[in-house]
Length: 194
Image (tube, rainbow, N blue to C red; front, side, top):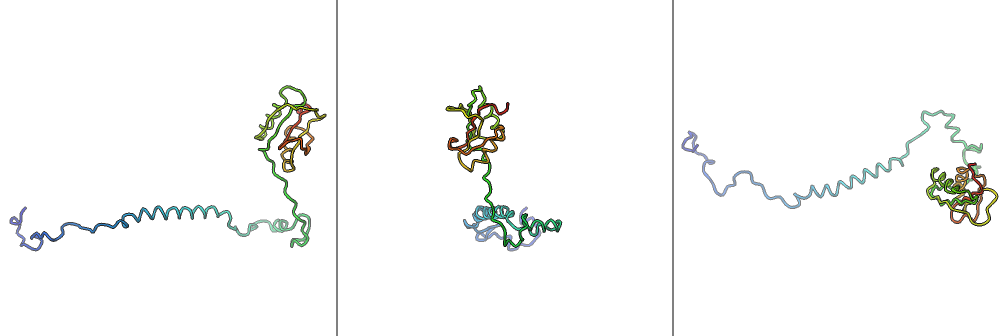
């Protein structure tokens, strides 16, 4: 359809102006306006994630208030009094005893056969491995065999571990000895399971 085919009078929109902009024209965007959303995600997102992880990790450190709410008042009074009957103000409280060292399941344990029973050290070493000990090795004893089976340990911190080894194998004698080397040595004079 041309202008001649219409019955409307001519106006300013009918005259083409080569200097006037046509359509939607926008100024070119700056480099910063195109890249700031990506920079924001790369900088702000890790900061927010770090803050959330730190907050979640510290949730366990926050005090929870009075834990005796809803509990038996007599039980809470008993919990605040020392077991030895000393006053609760701590004036005559006995000094704390040092805690016993924990059992070390990774301590080196050598099971030595001094009974000359074929496969005895291997069978007893297998019992210790099944009990959870991770560094157990069987072997043969050389020298003068003891009269009874014994568990030897090298240092005081291995005493609880040596006790557990002895109870696992059914050996009543546990001794601190330099002959244990750097760990625990089990010397089998007889079959402890017999």
